[in-house]
Image 1 (cartoon, rainbow, N blue to C red):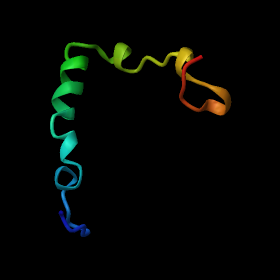
Image 2: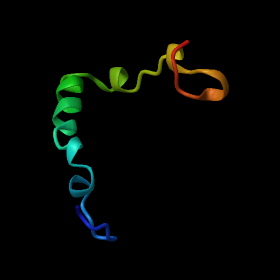
Image 3: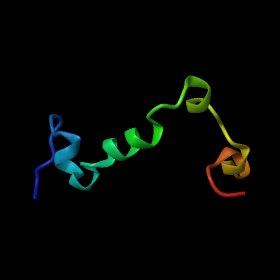
Image 4: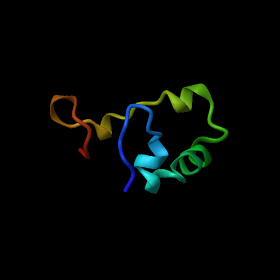
Length: 53
């Protein structure tokens, strides 16, 4: 088990996220600023919490 310190790298603490950047990057590759800034009201629940509506 990895010991946690102030200098611990995120990938050491959460190795399951190693491929997350590549996954997200491939999903947004080629989108313009307007598409990246889009906010859908369908994902906002009561009190502004995220959730399905």
